[in-house]
Image 1 (cartoon, helix red, strand yellow):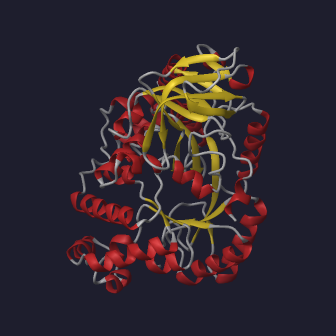
Image 2 (cartoon, rainbow, N blue to C red):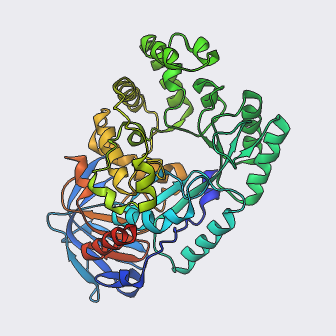
Length: 457
C-alpha cells in the first residue's frame, strides 16, 4: 500500500540565514502554542467550525474543541484567533528541485514556499545520484534540524529514445524498462515517473513491473499512449492533462498517428466530442486516476512586470526575458475549463500542482494562482482548497497524520485573515504558518520574503 512509501515525510532544506529565527519563530516543543477563538476550516467537507481553540504541543495538535471547553496550558503562547481562520498546510504536488532545474534555485524558492503556507511538496524528477541527498534531508527531519516544506514523494524519471530532456534515464526495450523499475525500487524512490517519449511496449512493461514491485508509476501520458489505456494500466497520476484533449476528439486514432502541427491542433478542437470525453472522465473516476492539471503553467499570465519578479534570481529573470511573448491560448483554456469541471463533477480525484522550476512559475505564490484557476474551472472554493490539503494527504496515504485540523495530527497549519471558503483568494492573506514544530508569525514570514528578494538582486 502507499503508506509504506511515506513512513516519515521529510522536510526540504531551506538555505536561509540565522536571522530567520528573529521575531516569533518558535519551536513548538519548547512551549505549547494555542490558537484561541479561531475559525477552523474543515478541509474534508468544506465547512467552518466557529469559535474553536486549537492546542499544539510538541509537533502535534493536542486538542481541538469549542473555545469554552478547551483547557489552555498555563505556559502556552496564546494567539487570539478572533476573526481569523486556521486551515491545514498547503501542498504543491508537482515541483522540480532536481533534473533539468539547477540546484541554485533551491536557495530562493524554498523560503518562498514556506512564506506562502506551502508545507509539503511532491518532487517529480530525482535521479539515482541525487536520492542520497533526499535521504539525508529525511534524516534531518527526524532530528528536527531543517525548516522547510515536507518532501512528500520523489520520482525517478524514465523516457524513451530521443528524450525530451538530455540526461534522462532512457529505455529502448521492455527488458530495459523492467530493469529500470527494479533499480528505482532498490534505490528507494517513491514512484517511477513515466515521460513523454516512451513507446507503448516499454510503457506497458513499466506498468506491469511496477505492479509486481509494489511501486507506483505516475507522470506524463506518453505521446504514443492513449489516456484511457494509461488509466486502465494503473497510472496513478496524470500530469498536465496530457493526451486528454486528443482523447476527447472523435478523430483520436488519426491524431495519435499524425505528425503533430497547427493543422492537427486545429482539428483536435474542431472534433471535440462531449459524450466521448464524458466516457473518458467516467473511466478516470472508476479507476481513481488522479489528475494534476498544473493549469497555472498553461493559463497563467506571463509578464516581466509581475511584482513577484523581484523574488526571481537575476539568472532566471534574464532567461525569462529572452522568451517569446506567449499569447493566451483561449481555445486550450476553454477546453481545460471544460475538462477540469467535468472531472470534478464525475468524482475524478485531483491535486494542485504548479510545475515549479518552469518560467513564470513563482514559488508558493503560483500555488494560490492554481487554486483560483480551479475555481474558475467550476470548483467551489472548498473543493479547490481540498486539492491542496486533504487530497494530497489522502494520495500519499498519510491522512491519519496530515490534511485536516484534528487532534493527534501533525501541526502543519496556516492562519489566515479571511475565509477561503467564501473567496479562494483569501488563502493568500496569511497571518502565520506552523510547520512541524515551528511557529512563524507574520514578521518572520516577511523576513523570509525580504531575504529572498535581497538574494535575488
